[in-house]
Length: 149
Image (cartoon, rainbow, N blue to C red; front, side):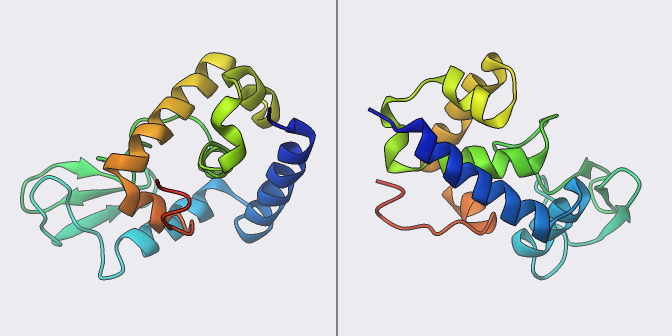
């Protein structure tokens, strides 16, 4: 059984670290852009690097295919309204070895989110373990055989 008091301590440490490194959600978003696209933004639709940043929207406009995209386009974070810093904490919790027998209600209580949102987040992270491990790595998580069986 999961010791949620220990898990809450771990999550609080993660959130404190994330909030100190990234005081705003925008700063974490910018960090994801740099880690995902070290050579500059790349369109997920046509792989062109010819784009114009739209800073007010946190998006890029591809000058080749005329589409708009962000760092989360094509990932498990696509279309989310939840703060990306809470997503990072959810990733740490869900990918931990202790999470296997926990519930969405516990995750929701830990992150102060709705249980349905927590259930969806958990499901998407579990799917991303197999389909989007590269993006999980770009969130500065340690990717190892232990975390991604």
